[in-house]
Image: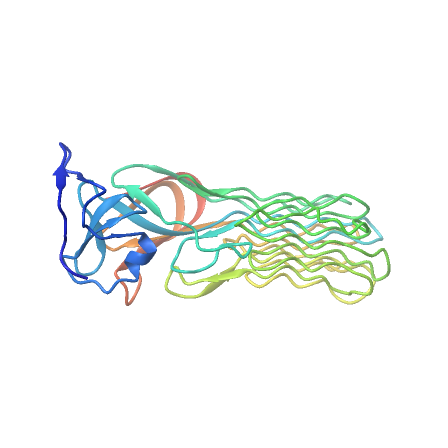
Amino acid sequence: MSELKTNKIQTNDTNNVAIDDALGLKSYDTTARDALTSVAGDTIYNTTTTKVEYYDGSSWQQTGDPKVEISYLIIAGGGSGGSGAANTSGGGGGGAGGYINSYASEASGGNSSTAEKLYLTKSTNYAVSVGAGGTGGTTNTSLGTTGNDSYVASVRAYGGGGAGTVSNQKAKKGGSGGGDGAYTNVGNVVVGTGLDFQGFRGGITTTTASPYPASGGGGAGAVGTDASSGSSTAVGGAGLSSSITGSAVTRAGGGGGSIYTSGSGAAGGSGGGGTGGRGNLAATAGTANTGSGGGGSANGNASGAGGSGVVILRYPNTFTLAQSGLTTSNINTAIGGTSDKYTTITGGTGTVSFS
């Protein structure tokens, strides 16, 4: 890059720089800016933030009132599995919580592209919440419970859909959709849909034949497996991997469907999906702080609860995060080999601010 080139720059009373459209100042969006080979002192106009920015030798800074550039991974609570009837077949797997990722070029859920970063004002409180997973069913033929939403400021991930159970108590939609229960959706119609840009649908059940399988819940990275004629397992949809903390971790898998007469309950999707039950073998819950779906149960047993969600924020190490009302497992932790920090928020509803 070359030096700043401009015909007119005006400074207003708050020292923010106003730029005329006719200026020669080079313009880039954030993605294009990050691809530049820059040296200290380079100055551009960022069309994403609508701010003049300069490179300080390690990161881009804004003139005037600086914003904090935030990469985030926001995952909602997973849905719980469905509970099957006593002495018969059972419930589908719960859907994973909605998955929204703005880090680097990593995907968000539902095969969608990277989300836009957040640009937050210093010394301002922003609302944050981490969604709990859906509660596991404890009675015969209980539908799964949808997980709770997670959010940061205006960005919201929606809870995973609760699973269906036996005989037409159909799955619920969500960030990723819940899987159908056994005997449920022979008409081959998707009920447990996932939300655009957050997750995939749950599986659909298209058979009433032995061994009476139920379908897997949708994951952030793949649909839940359909329970079709002759199938013995219907696994949960796969989750997605992110390296936002500096290490690759897979999260947000769908819960596995249950089975009654033979075999084993279906595995949960990669990233923490709960395992489906078989007969009197219990289903398992989605893994905490992954937003994964819980496994479905058979024979009147309790289904697996959905895993709680998580919020991870990554930002330049020149800023410090403070929080109120939230539970964190890491706060302002340096990421080796970079000029960034990250904070992992594992529970609560409260606020964050930056200084």
